Image 1 (cartoon, rainbow, N blue to C red):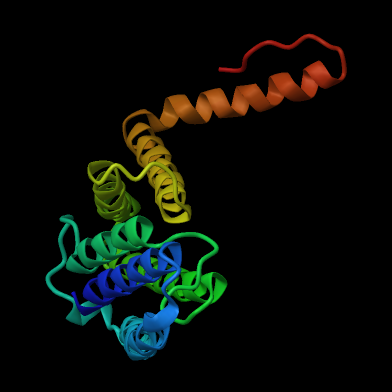
Image 2: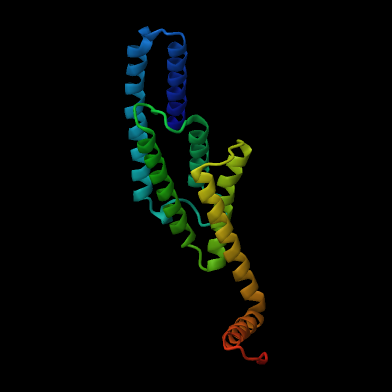
Length: 206
């Protein structure tokens, strides 16, 4: 991916700058500054084009309807993990402040999630939607684990969404097989709570 290649070049440029600073050799600063000014606009263009592409994406034109991990998820997972490995909090990143760079990355993530939600809506029931989202969220988390990335905003986001979809899937699965039992328990639990609030006694209703 062009964006990851540019991220690597930016990190190399930053490393060279730090080496020159440690050696008290500022003669290459103008050159390194020019490299930054070449790389940053290109990175910004790529990020903006990716975001715009996701905004314009039509779910019906993004491949066949299935449960497998979507190619958009695969690309984003590797991009996000590359950012986590190459980016350093609080530093200037390719001529752009840390806050501005991460804002663009988070915007890209939100549009990826929006596309995944739209793709899931093509499935004809809530259980199928949950399965699709679980597979995709799980893949992103596994990429982070594989690359030994412990804690980032992106990983926490996908872990939380994965747990939500797992809980939803379990709830749907139970409701499908034990709908009457769940309705009975929910109904009588509510009655017990209401009566207990008045300090009275109650009996489960059949």
